[in-house]
Image (cartoon, rainbow, N blue to C red; front, side, top):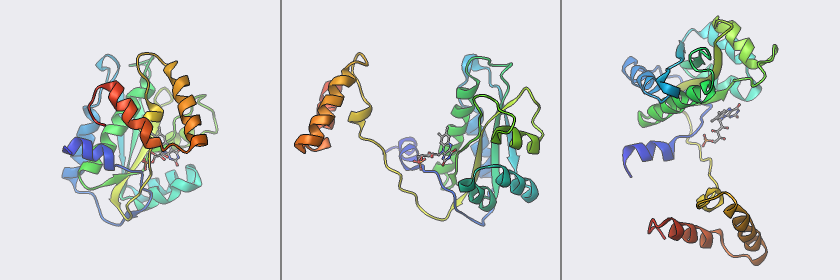
Length: 210
Ligand SMILES: Cc1cc2nc3c(=O)[nH]c(=O)nc-3n(C[C@H](O)[C@H](O)[C@H](O)COP(=O)(O)O)c2cc1C
């Protein structure tokens, strides 16, 4: 498997990190990966805030939901991904996520790990985590905060799984899904293994991976 595919395959969300600082060289490479992410009309509406200050990190950890407190406390640093909707009024959320994912993958490729904290508030509510963290980081009102990415050396290997490709895949038009749902339903009742559907999809795709 080539290194890009391996990083994609092996990246997992981690909330536990070892108390090891991140080398500047690695941090720089990760931020560069964010900078090279695609964005609508190449608008590059980003601002990446690297937070190393323990007091600020602690304040952020108090603002996010319980599960993530740990990752912000344990990670030696976190990258907050902000976007300016004035530079991209149409796809600023996706712009923020392409950069976030690029950085998560770059971290993985360097033997590091990240914990994706999605803080963007669709309705931009006053009491949202996004607003609270924006205030802590002094992010101007017109900017939006998409994600926070605690970064560090992982303590454990995570093993989240994925659905089979057959469940996610259609050919030509979406309505093929109905047929697939029927097939999956049949699978449940007839105990046909899910594997029998995957080769079928692969054959349709013409990949030869059967
Ligand atoms: C846009 C986005 C927002 C996320 N926000 C949260 C979150 O608020 N809470 C959470 O537990 N995990 C969050 N995550 C992490 C996902 O839960 C995690 O990626 C998913 O469970 C799959 O696990 P894996 O990344 O380890 O494969 C987010 C991931 C993405 C892509």
